[in-house]
Length: 634
Image (cartoon, rainbow, N blue to C red; front, top):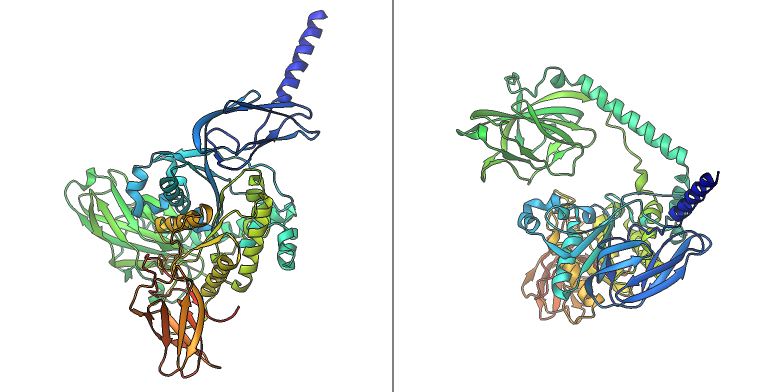
């Protein structure tokens, strides 16, 4: 009996000891980078009344967990350096650096990982090895009910050829440039989600002026509604694709096989669309091409680049599946293992499934097969045959994860105890349908985030939307142009905000342009100017004012940004009084720009680069482009 009592006491003591262990938030972990030159908060969880001791850089700090088990300790400002070790009761955190920490947020152009940028940055990835650039990637979650206090996962990772593949390209190049310039460690807390509108990153209080968004957030607090919506949409989608597969004669007759009879197939040009000949339809089409490869090809690995395809594809070579992508945006890059290719004739077959819009092989993308550095061009004539035509387009999706408030609660609020240097933000494509409200939403969000971090001078650096879509013959209104103007106005009127202009970095046929290094570098310029107060040129020409002289309008620019490259300019439109905009002639004259159209006798306004995909050339002598702008009063 005595032994049993002893065992019971030991067992209870073990349980108490287990429960008394300190727990730390996901961000406070091995390899973290702490913000230099700010009082630091270290926080966590334990049993109520539990004593907490932190030992860090030869100092000891003590506190006690409150009645809810929460505890926090403030550490004094520290200079950049490391690596250090931190002891928190029985926990040892290793390899801690002190430097600058930035929160990187937004939608897919911020999310876009380095692996998607391989064609431009293969050597960058291969040679990546920097312990002083570290990323913490926030798990992509949403929560409409309440702000979360912690993350469901994530870890600090330093840069090497493996980890860099998952790092945000924009944020990586931003961090790299700052690390080189400031010679201090740079940590990125990357919290973004493709397709997300700005209101998803805002809390309920910030959206009080927008009852429709608040009502939507309230609606999705209902777990049963989320489950039933997702379940119903999954079922509808599954049924549509099942019907497509069942109807597709190419699947039934195995058109993927290299010996399939394609003598009766029609021809089309790749890149291009079969719908140009067939008319628009949703369904599936099979596209194939024969190529002849030299001796030894059967012993080689290869790389197949099929540009981009709208929407989904399954790709075969010689009847063997080599890859598939389920939606339109990712590039079609397929590694071909040894033994798939043959000496002599080879057949590439692509089954394309398109659920809405125009199915096509996207123009101005690369299409080739590469073996040992030798490329076989795949552009030109291909054969095609329709597999199935569907009566209805594929069912849509609600995209609950993009609804207001959800991403703030799950992906921003858990970060606010962690001290940071500032924010970088690449977002807006998903708000171009209602651009006029964007400036107010973004300004409100910036103010709220700063208040949550309790620091009103945190730099907020905005990537302005790049040029995108087909060029237009006439000056027209544009949701993309209006949203860029909203971003420009925010950068001018919100203190400690900066704008990285990317109007020269886009790709007309791709909402995800690859040149993310220049984006990161331009953000870094803003960070050095605003965050470090360095006397550097971080902006191209910044429009300031206009005056009318006869039939011309003369534009002035902010001092310090008005060292203009001289010459004739394009991208300008001028407005006749009580009339519409017309293309204009323009030229620099010293630090001014003169704009006119001989047919416009009473000009009242000018727009520059006001289009989805403009081609203006106004730059400063530093090489930085001017933001698109309008002289109209907002």
